[in-house]
Picture 1 (cartoon, rainbow, N blue to C red):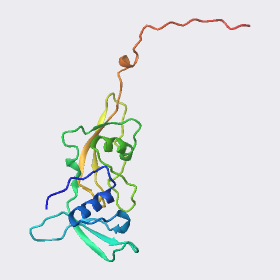
Picture 2 (picture 1 turned 90 degrees about the vertical axis):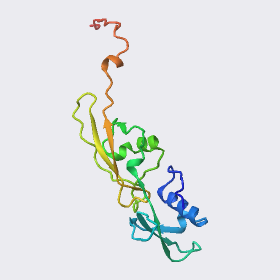
Picture 3 (picture 1 turned 30 degrees about the vertical axis):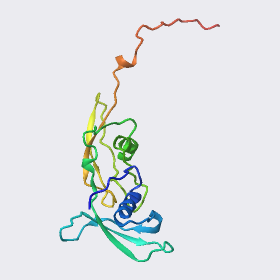
Picture 4 (picture 1 turned 180 degrees about the horizontal axis):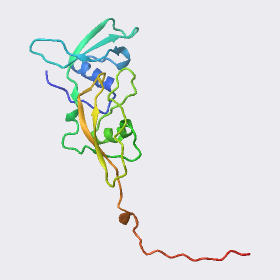
Length: 183
């Protein structure tokens, strides 16, 4: 069975449901199941997948019981490909402060909104000392409970310093005029 190409701008749970529906000719919706924590796969034989995930039917969904699916998560280190791994620091303090830029740069939808299935490990960005054009690398790591991603990738955050000579485009100023205050 060939891997499917999916829309990674969707929420993680929807990506998994799309995979299940594609490989089983179903029309499941996210609300019809709950998803356990992904674990390292324990299946054998000629089919090798790196992740096991148990789906449990929600009462009233038209399904009962549970089923464990086996699939490969995406190695997050492959996501950038040939695209830049450098992001401007701006006002960012934590990795999550760069999330919108990371998602936009790579056409993905990483989130930590689902309390049970965080997509990445958040944390503080490296400390900047104020050196001009300073940059630091940091590990962007998929959370162990991420439904879609695994492993980590090295990203770089840089201070987007602007040369003062580029910011001051008119160096010939009008001058100052002193006006004595009325007494």
